[in-house]
Length: 341
Image (cartoon, rainbow, N blue to C red; front, top):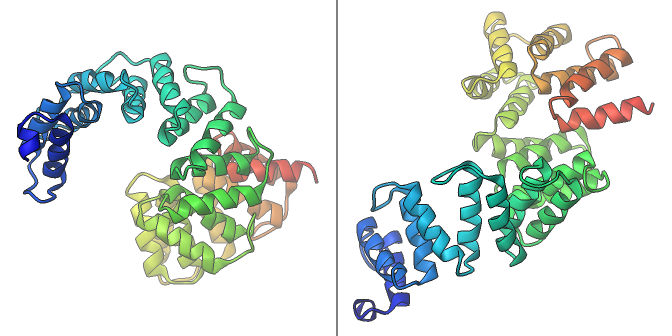
């Protein structure tokens, strides 16, 4: 405190951090901003970055993207990689500045080349989407890998997707499962869902309903809609209709067409009444015809395997293709496999 009051910028920033989280003092965003600003005005990059965050969120100061941009830029120009990454995000989304993918790329690249994992993942995403740079799955995979190897959960999930689909890297379900697992263990809900579905279908990992249930439950509890639908379906298959309704309702309330169809069907038929294979096919058909890619992929699998419907390769290809056109990774994989048979 004494050094901070004497004008030491590093100590002022440190004191601001203590007020921000309430370490050794009562949490006070106004006091945090006061000390961050004193240090920031002396040109201390860490404090400039911290002050930018306070303005972006409106903690202890009136919310202002323009002020956030000002302080991010000052820190970024001194080489602060976290500020460079955040400045990239602000430019990408048009917060406080005119939206510009080119400016976003500039700042992401500066931070990424200095080893900032978040920026590497963001730069990979820009290459994957072709936003501000020519689309390049290979460049995307390169940056995702650099970030993934540093432990970035989002990058690990993204790299897993690329291996699952075989874009930018050779198709390899085992590699996909490896990266999904690493991300899933860090709490990434999308990775938990993907890993759960892989266990459910025995793709890249041994078939295991227990492992599928474990990972899908974790993801569903974090609000992942696809996981909620899958866990609902598992409960439905096990005739635990109370739990099935619970998970379908959570997904349906967020507008998911397939969950709404499941829920409506269960209400109409009585949630304690087991459903026939034909009724299950009818339920998926309604959702598939409404454009739900998961239902389309599932219907494709039913036709491919002859589960609940007569086996029909052409119908399977039709539904896989419709789901694949909407970006469903499992449908793309199944479509490629079935076309080779």
